[in-house]
Image 1 (cartoon, protein in one colour):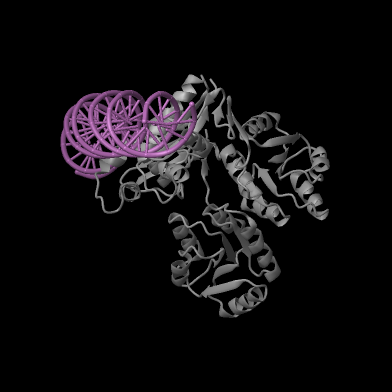
Image 2 (cartoon, helix red, strand yellow):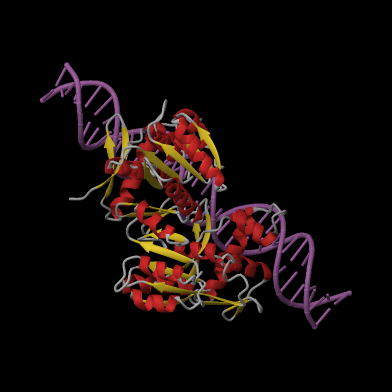
Length: 221
Length: 221
DNA sequence: ATTGAACCTTAATAAAACCTTAAAATATAT
DNA sequence: ATATATTTTAAGGTTTTATTAAGGTTCAAT
């Protein structure tokens, strides 16, 4: 997935771009409204994320120009003002979604994926996450081979990596929804996968959220 | 699109319904607050339009009840009073839009469409309050993990944060209504949650209102 | 000031949830 | 057919969280 991100706060932009790229989303960045509009016109993006308050030209203005020229790229507006009024204004001008600042990047990713319909990463041959490099085709994680179930577990966790997955979800994904397997299956394979992550000296870990599920985290200290 | 319209002025209602249906919007009508609430609870509407002044139960009351039960259907408030105060009140209680009477039906339709366009905006995964950032999905509060019960307590307090919740209410919300637990459960978890707020250096506090309950406050000095 | 009720905090115990390991069963390759 | 790898099962251990209980503090009424 390839997106355009128009945002003038460099600090925020850096952080967001970092996370998005980690999730396999390729990001182009413009730090003002004019550049943003010029890029946005090109029909190469799967989605455009527009901050409202921008130098030279506001997000609303860009939005209006784009819709006037019938550029159909899905657009998500970002604004510090969570007022319903602003929300309405953006949506009336033809934005597809609206997110109030500050927002959780997981939320942004979820909405990007909702808009782009096809669950990203799904058909990628290779998935990067943190210092990990998973090759689906060869079922290798960095220099280690994974078994089938280990690989399926990893793939499950790599779909929307910021979202925790519960055991039932994982069971369905690996053993099929008919099979009402034991939670212990999951625990065992989480344990196996953790062992391999450790062996790789990866900074990626599988975090347990009690009663809720598991998720991948990239430990940056 | 299917909507619920709660309005006691029959003459107005007829006219509005007529225009909406002509635009392909299917409308159900309730002419008083009580019926309105009973219908509104059903998660089958794309939007609910609430008049403020209603027999038996005001639009604000309906709104409050709905948000308390975590009904996420988008809501548009209608009021003869275009007072800014009323608008703020409605939006604070969780209305998504506000329209002053008299209004043009074209305006209403535009707003209905704006609201229905947004994809699943209603199910917020993240709740902000003051300097707090609660991520329901990952059960994190800013950078800290919460346990299940802590999270449930916080969620309870975050529903209509301006209203104090008494211990019984909290017990029901966390331990279920059948369980007639000890008030001390609540006190213990309030204490735990306070400890985490302190650790976060948050300006949000849990205020005790003796004999009445607890509420969140955002301390701005 | 004294008192009792409501509330707070903390620590211990109990109960779940989760983790790990290894043996048994099954599948796969040689 | 045998060896090897993987999956399933099972058991026991570890950790986290929930509950209980006890003693302390605050508050408001007298």
